[in-house]
Image (cartoon, rainbow, N blue to C red):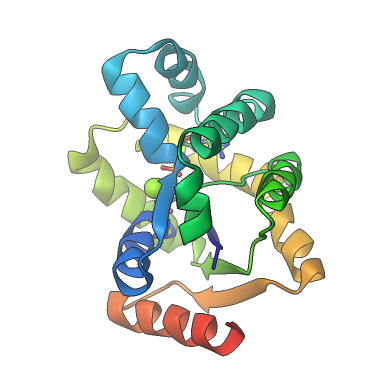
Length: 191
Ligand code: ATP
Ligand code: MG
């Protein structure tokens, strides 16, 4: 089973991924965490990524797809076990590249969990997280830019996956346990 956890910045992708990993024994690939790790270690990729992330922009598709391809090559067993993709794909070209990559392992995306959260709640959560996260992008100006980028570049993926019949909408407002239960119910229904 391969899952994409999808939603706006601050929608709870990371939090809900942690719970899914425990419940289903999936491997977690979080491009946001991966890039932040590179920034902390000041690698070449980290330095490049930082210039985009601190401006609330996406890392260019070509670079991001190369990074994913490397992860697949280095850990072929993770793809066999099943992956939860958190923060990837974020654009249509990324989704198309992901389908090709998974196809090479004779597998595909089975469910896209769309965490749907009200905009004022997203802003509230990211401002709150910014008090401790140390993230260069959890401040109000960058949050506004990230939401704008989300609407222009990432939100069209909802239609894309609806067209494939794999998009499962989840109300991502409110209680964490209720959201986890709703996700599990959707996954169990479709697998
Ligand atoms: P959530 O709160 O729902 O977990 P998030 O706001 O923490 O979401 P991350 O996935 O951590 O978002 O990503 C942080 C930043 O890293 C993005 O704003 C973007 O600049 C960069 N990034 C992460 N994944 C990608 C990707 N697939 N393509 C391009 N840029 C990416
Ligand atoms: Mg995250």
